[in-house]
Length: 67
Image (cartoon, rainbow, N blue to C red):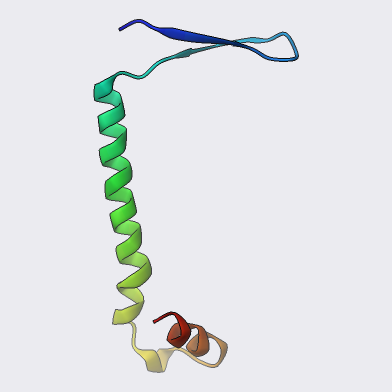
């Protein structure tokens, strides 16, 4: 699969991009999926494990409003 896309900019610069094949797209999808799952775990589960007594004032309010 040797396909390319050429784009001409308003500044008369020609850009060439090679199109990704199904294998590359699938690999990128899997990597993105794993990253998103890890991000969700960090955002929602890790703060649950933190002792609430360690949070003071302003941060305690935000902790309880989200969780």
